[in-house]
Length: 69
Image (cartoon, rainbow, N blue to C red):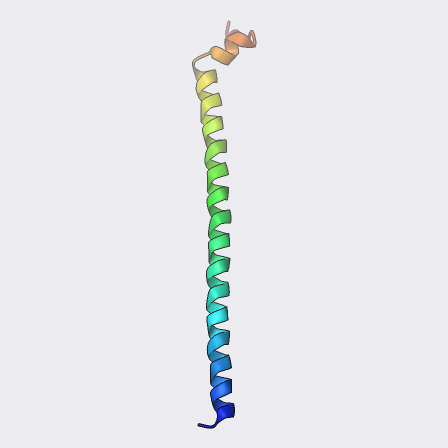
């Protein structure tokens, strides 16, 4: 193996390492975005559950002067 082949192989190895590093970074940032999305979705669902519960026990109906007969 001459020096040119050795240099080419070394560059290929470095390119592969760079691709792996970029892939890991992309996965980490995408995972963070996904986790944030699920967190906000959970918060919104909990708010809807709280509102449903408050209407079900009649608290908001009393405050809004809504009467059922």
